[in-house]
Image 1 (cartoon, one colour):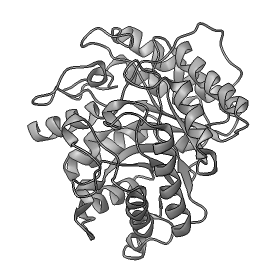
Image 2 (cartoon, helix red, strand yellow; image 1 turned 180 degrees about the vertical axis):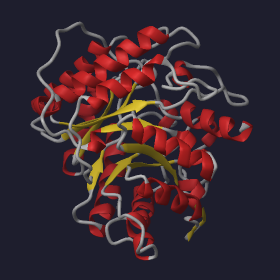
Image 3 (cartoon, helix red, strand yellow; image 1 turned 90 degrees about the horizontal axis):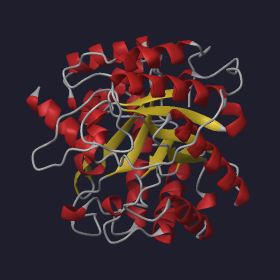
Length: 370
């Protein structure tokens, strides 16, 4: 369990929880009649880090509260162990477990091995030296886990849940995830090369941009989005990803509204996927830290409103960050993102878990596919 906690904490620290905006408002319109199961998602790095028994228990519990999708980092450096040598066993077991539980999966293509990285990893997670290298990695994953993937052919009795959407990188507007200095044109080039490879391997795949947030730690959200679209990113994006961290639930909704307006101004109409939002119930003070009651209220309101306005705003889904609290990993620094779990560090439910379940239960969610 100590190893599990350490791995989860490290993964959470790399999740890129960042400062958003806030706004007051009134309740939104009625819930649409058919919201797909995969609209409601979770970030749950403990699933990959845990053993098989833990994974089974956790997936069953997540499904019981209305979660239909898990967003998971596909650590490039843990799959391509040496140039051209891919090891899929860790992720095979993970994908198989999700498929058995009827869960969809949104992978994040991230964390290149040292022999592919463009810079020193001690200052953050650098992009690959050449954008085409991430494209080649993505193509291998599509060939393994996509609709015609070898993974599914090798398991004819397994319920088919092929991966149909792929998220390219994480928060490239922050220096932590682009250590040489955030570069909208550089990210657009990475996105273009990766999208091309994904679409050659699966013409029907959906390419999801990196989740972007507003933060003092990098290039402002609006400036970065305009820059990447000016560099031609629009041709590569099927779904635009937003990290809607804010002080209040209404602030998260306002972030989605502002993103829709910005994309409209740019003449773009991709769906928007809120791939992270959440609040801490403890830990160090931050704009996103409250108490357990405040967390529950924000979770309930935000999820309910995002569901209710999904058609109006063109939302693909809402993914909560995160399932479970995690400790500070060795050598790391405490921050609010380690305390946003629906469960506490020992796996006990917070009031936010029931708030999440009640918001999700209001939706008619037929099991679907990405």
